[in-house]
Length: 125
Image (cartoon, rainbow, N blue to C red; front, side, top):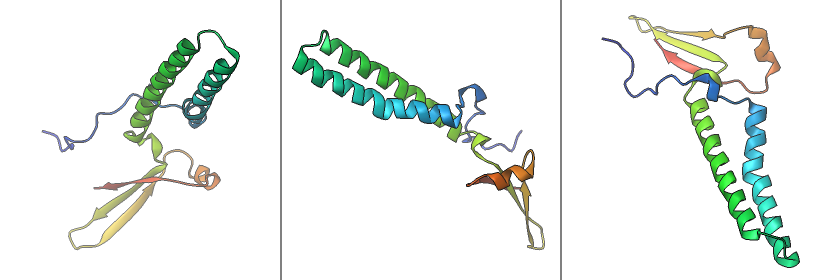
């Protein structure tokens, strides 16, 4: 018998966690670039009689939707993993009611001073 929370999501595979740079680039492509390109082709295609306007717009919409699905999955994997945390604040309470907080940072603690924002997970023991 284990003390694990049955509602806790299963541990995720880190292969789906994208770097922030790649994620932000793909997000820009899906949310801004592809819709803008599609609108441009549709508008100019109508004015200048470009070939296969409907097929190009349909293909762009399908690619945009599929990439959006992949980004949503990557976001879910990231948000359910511990990768997003810079460390943990461990909280324990003794039988006499005194409380103790311990900061645990994996790796070099000096790296935290180089960040603008840090995020810690609160772990109750």
